[in-house]
Image (cartoon, rainbow, N blue to C red):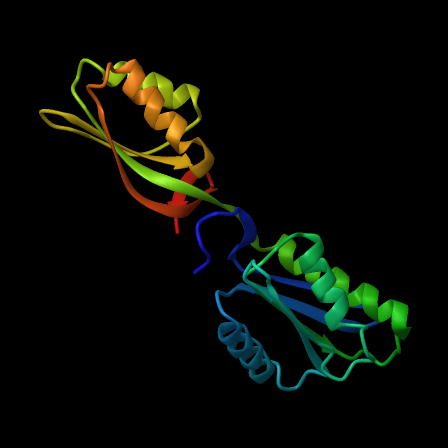
Length: 219
């Protein structure tokens, strides 16, 4: 797992996209992966699934500092498939992602430019049908307070656009929040100030988080 210190874009749920150029079918299959081994396993699986295809070209990007980047033309003319596919992933600033574009030859040669366009277009279509998220480094904080301060704290959380994960009401109130890492120290100080030091703030862990369909997910 990457150190929790830098935001990055990745695929949360993979998708499939298909385009046709001069009767050749290009099927792009996208998936999230965390390791190069997982990417290779995914590619091998697609080659078995589409064993009767003319080509199964691939590209993937893994990690951040620096990323591992690989691609394969799988029998197409050099740099007409894998490299154009990889360029799309790099251009969209994605990592921890693999894409395989399966081609069923339609009988008409596309030429170098045609192949580049076809593989890039298919890759884009596959990504368009995937769920792409931005993972941000954050700190999971637990705020413990009495009922006298809860209104001030909740107002400050809302004004600061901080995500509330849960709130538990017993004889005290405990609020779980996810704070972007660069805001965490300022947020802890603010909570202390607005409650006169009565609220306790505990740092539980540093994690990546992303908002998906309106909900905060931790990674």
